[in-house]
Length: 147
Image (cartoon, rainbow, N blue to C red; front, side, top):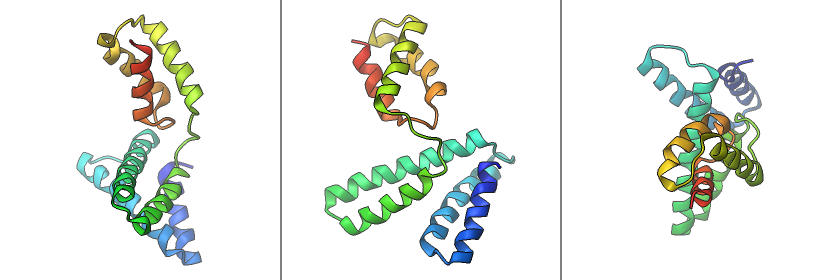
């Protein structure tokens, strides 16, 4: 079952169970997917849908930081719940230690030795961790290893 089909089925299930919050989150995600499908005039595959899901979670994490800074716990709780629902559609996330190992292997593979090689490392690394690790964490670990 593709991610699009899974989202549709879960949306129907949320309608049946009258889970309005989950329904609204799934609709927001499906709307983002549909907008890109319309712009690109094609049906998106699972990898492209994963990119959108990752982007949606990233936007919500950024909002969460702002809400925490502003002391808006009510909004922060809502955003945390949205993140939890969307995260169910992403592949299992890698631990920091697993990401660190992949970063070190990739640095050795491309023969990087300084921060000037960061672009080369990131372009080789991101396809390996796509959708399974936070980009900020990956970037941070690469910078630590390229000093």
